[in-house]
Length: 307
Image (cartoon, rainbow, N blue to C red; front, side, top):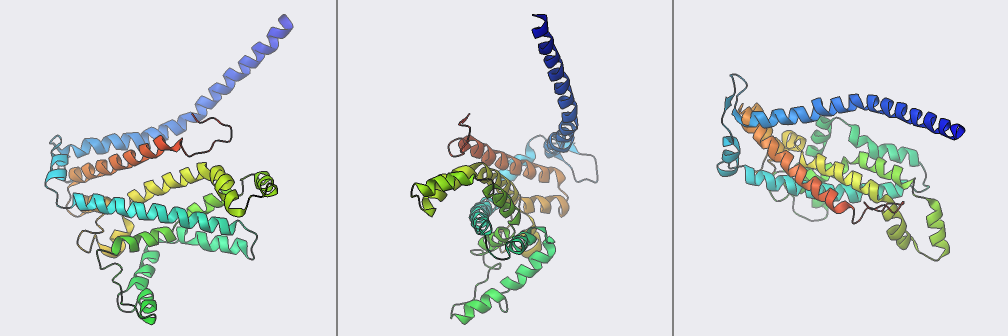
């Protein structure tokens, strides 16, 4: 009995020491999470309850900023609609585009490494250069897209000067910038077990059936991750409005983040801007909660644990 108990005691001692080391290594992560995420979030909530311009001491006014935001602000409704509309188009478009391109780049084609770099480069280019370039493409009179339309006998389109086209036009830029999603999808595709495809092919399954019943289920965790990251990024969009449209035409591209920027750095209403920020956080939290709640219905776990 003594010879049996000694290894067990030694093993439990090792396990406890490993657990202590693990907890110690997690301390920086918890500190970063607290000071860089939760503490600023509480700070934003506190500032949103004040009337503060940044030039004088804040004055506590309770929920007046929120009441004014939803009852008197002429932009809030249009901003919420524009933000959700943009996020919907951008998320769906970028997911389909990046997955399709990743499928192509996963095949054995000539210059595959060069093509992978070409599709990833837009993601790391300076934002100012990107939007200046796209403004030339969208230009109403001499832009490249309108030049192509004129060659096929179609009328010119005011891509970023017409309220009907501005959000889809900005969403197209967001889709083009989804090189990071392509890389993540590509890494996931390379980890799909080839033995599954070989077995299905031996059973007579065609390419479409293998895609539906093998590739998509195996990629579902990667799809969930990219969907979540794309949703969070596109609900916080601000750069296209700042660089190209200034929230116009009308209020059609006055996204919530642009509204927050305008209140904070143009009108110096920092408390009001923080209230808008918390509205953005609430929308993000709601969409993220729905995504996590429904994920167990379509995410495939190879181990069979759906909990």
